[in-house]
Amino acid sequence: MKLANRMGKLGTETAFVVLAKAKALEAQGKDVIHLEIGEPDFDTPKNIREAAKRALDEGYTHYGPSAGFPAFREVIAQEISKRWGVSVTPEQVVVTPGAKPIMFFAILALINSGDEVIYPNPGFPIYESVINLVGANPVPILLREENDFEMDIQELRDKITSKTRMLIINSPGNPTGSVLSKTNVEAIAEIIRGKEIMVLSDEVYHRILYEGEHHSIFSVPGMQEQTILLNGFSKTYAMTGWRLGFGVMREDLAQKIAQLMTNSNSCTSSFTQMAGIEALQGPQDEVDRMVAEFRRRRQVIVEGLNAIDGISCKKPKGAFYVFPNVKEIGWNCGKLADYFLEKAGVAVLSGLSFGQFGDGYLRLSYANSVENIQKSLERIRDAIAAI
Image (cartoon, rainbow, N blue to C red):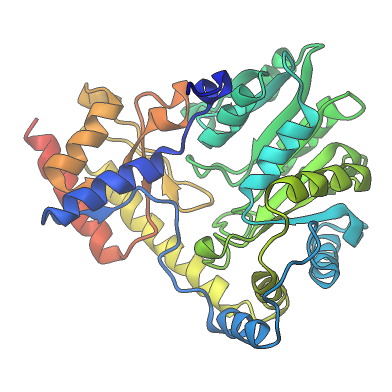
């Protein structure tokens, strides 16, 4: 039986493809340093793990509401209200198994075939993948290195047409680590406000910030009606395997997103939601320590990459990725990423994994020890010297 035509439009997340290749090489005895996967290398804080254990013992092993347990949604609503100085009710919150479903469901619920969606490029690859899947037209907006990979406001104005129905923004950003300034967030709001355009604001890295403050378009007056705030627990609390995320949006839209949850996942795991309550209400010391360590690693990897001939690297303001320019080496970035894995035993991602404008770059995750980062830098330097 042939696959449905839509499957030909579906992309992937290359990090998992490269991880599989790296694991296969390790199975053959090769020593590989993993800088490809976007996953904190820290354990989930103990208080969160203990909360999950208690929840299991208390019987949170059954179905729950598709939108999430009311108690958890209330905690999320209170957190967002406090953080951004807005009024959010539990009815505006939908809990999902990871943050990706909010991305998927939002596009599925709001975007028709032929509509246009503006998204950052280089950017998280699933944006473009889902836009293509629903038959819409992906409209990339170039994030330029000379602009610290921040969105160009005039270019955004120029990209908007009568067919534009959604703008996706991501700050702090993957893969570049860029952060939208308050000025640019307000400028984006000024452009979008009042138009028939929804903003999908991906803020999963909001706590992993090294410079300045995080600014959310959800907090800009008049934008709550036009914004879907996407967030999750994977990055901030080192809970990638728990699959726990949420979206905050208009109540009428939240009902439709919950309906998509009913049709796809039924509900998010019950005991993980109880752990999520503890994550938000419990001590935040482990998060602060993790971010401090990421800051230390950022310094090591940026300085190390800039010391290698043929590589230049901007210092990211958030997340835990660097996006170095490797154009001077003279190789296709995909070929170079393969070379580093096979020759040097360092798993990295091609910039093209994040869209056409990622050509000439690589993404390296510094969610690894300083020792391994230093070792990987030595291996990359030696591999380049051997070209």
